[in-house]
Structure formats: structure tokens, C-alpha cells
Length: 377
Image: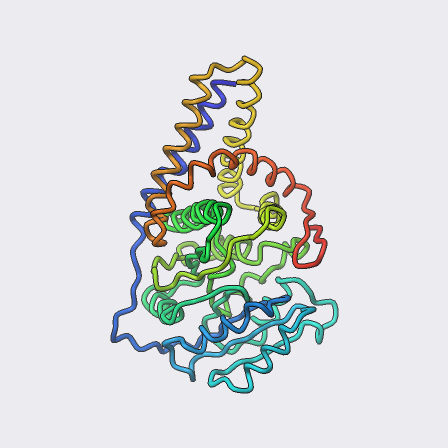
């Protein structure tokens, strides 16, 4: 057990510290003051029951520093049961931007987020498609930063940073730190030329590329993964054409889960796609992260039973904490949340059993999301 734990911790440290260096090496992107965008964009927003949030996002898009004639916004409604559709229609009546509302109910047998994304892609008229969620907020420079990086590097897929805001409770602050690690790992892995994760609240890709990689073909039965499966397919078919938009002006903000139950359902939903990853490299990263947390969880039982010395237990947990601290210090600094770094301490107390639980439940592929019971096929 001690040797296995030591080797797993070494593998984890190598994985994280290598990505810490890659994060530092990622070039910052910032559109010059005089840059005038010339890229036709389509912002696609899949929504379901977002009446509380959608108007704020639409107002953010209305204020974008982007030529109105080059921008269209497509809201794709996935059978909402609240006032989402009514609110979008009311806002559209007085909007100065091109705003279209699509209804999945008009297309038989189409439901869930992947179907909404697919229909949005089919009907979008832009060259570059930018995606976010109905409960997100964006700054005025958001689309301008995308257009600049797209013209500068001509990528096929762009992953952007996401952060939580309005984190008032300890629970929400801990979520921000944990979520920052995912964003950092995703961006750094792209920098290494080994993309493994991104977040659908802030991504973009070319319309023709979606078609060329056959969209979501091959993982239609998995409700989650509209972002990462496509990321993997684009990287596999077009190596070097995936980039990370490291710009503080391109950060998309969303809210942390308010309850433990909603948080666990969300993380199980994310974990449910891991077993379907086809890239061996991506699978290995997931296995190392799960294994190190599983062994640290097992170490608690061994310590209590007297089978593991206290100094080894303490050294193991301190080693993981030090590695995570060095990495998160960089990522949280970029996100403007470095003061949150010390919330790692309470997070460490629950992170190990949390990863073991969500990883195990994710293998079952069953969870509740937005009023539906989802089971991956």
C-alpha cells in the first residue's frame, strides 16, 4: 500500500507540476485597442428553464464591443417549463442585435443539450460559433477577444476560461477553488498539446469543423460531453488546431451550486462521460487523479486501524496539498481570486471522498439534471 501510494503521488505530482509550467508558458491574449473585428460570429445559447438568468446574459451580449452586423445570437430552447421563451421573445422585440429563438419542440425527438447545440450549429450563419450557457455573464470584450485570437492563430477550436461569481458562502468559495483547478488543468493541457477538458460555458469552434468531425456522432447516447468529446475529436483530426484563450477579458462567469445535492448531481454528470473517453492519454489522466484520491481515502481507514503510520499519512496528504497549492496559486491569480487560495484547507478535508464518490457514481451514468432523470446509454 505504501509503495503504491508513493508511486501514485509521484505520478500525480508530475502531472500537476508539468501543467503548472505549461500554464505559465501559455501566451496571454489581449486584443489591441485599435483592433476592429471582421469575423462573423454566432453566439449559441442552449437553454432550459433559465427564466431567472437569461435576460442578464442577453443584456451582456447587447453591450458587446462588437459590430452588430457581424453578430447573431441564437437561443435554443430545450422544452423549458418556465417563462424562458416568453422573456426571450419580449427582449427580442426591443433588441438592436440579431436575436433568434429556436424551439427543440419543433423538431421531433430532439431534446437535451447536445440536440440544442446541434440544431444551433445547423442554423447558425456565422463562421465562428461561440457557446455559453443561459445562466452565465460575460464582459463587454468577450467576443472581441475571441475574434482577435481566431484571426491571429486561425485555430479550429478555442477553449475559454470560466469562473464563479457571487460566492458568498464557504461552500461556494470551496467550489470556486475546485472549479479553478479544472479550468487550469484544461488550459494547461491544451498548452502541452494534449487537450483533455474544457467547459461548454465558454468555447468556440468553426462551423465547418463541427461537420468535418461528424459532430457528436459516436457519443449520442451520453447526455453530457457536448464540449469535451468534440474537443477530443477536433484534436485527433486536426492536431495543433486547439488553443486556449488566456485573457482575463474573456472570462465567463457563472454561479456555484447552492446545495450539496445539486452540486453532487452536477459533478456526477461531469464524471459520467469519463468512461467513454477514447483517448488513452485523457483516460490516463482521469485514472491517476481518481487513483490518488482513492488511495488517500483508503489511507484514512488504514490509519484508524493502525495499519498505516501517522507520519506516512500526514506526509501523503501534505504532499498532495503542496502540489495543488503551487498549481492553484497560478490559476487563481489569473482569475483574480488569489485570496481564495486558503480555502484549499477545508476543501482538502472533503475532496478525497468527494472524488471517490462522484467517480464511482459517474460510472453508473445516472443522475438528475434540470427536472429530468438522465441515464447514459
